[in-house]
Length: 98
Image (cartoon, rainbow, N blue to C red; front, side, top):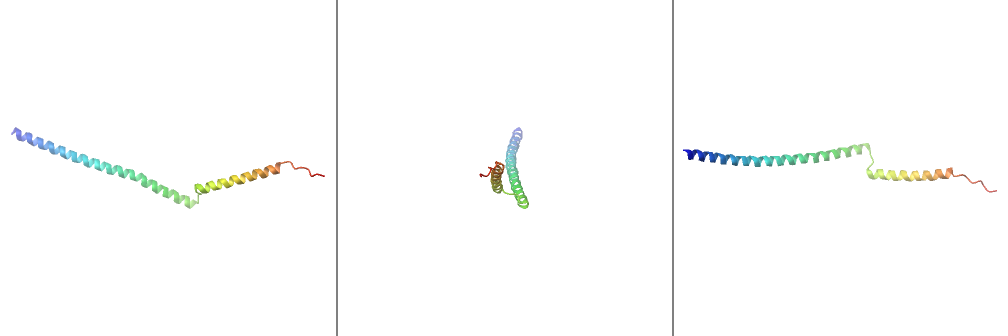
């Protein structure tokens, strides 16, 4: 009788360990799936946000970085020419020779 109870307890313990191992594997698998999904969400949001920003910039006709750099270079050129012209205008005029 004691042997039967001991055998049943061992079988029950073995079954419980087996089920615990299976549950642990399922939990790890589920955790990995959830972790992967959570990682994918920011990437999807980032892509969606970039598309929204691009559409807004296009709608507002905001210049791109290259266009902005070109504008800056042109303005610097104009500024240099204006400086030269203002220096010429400010230079004392020589009296005409007689």
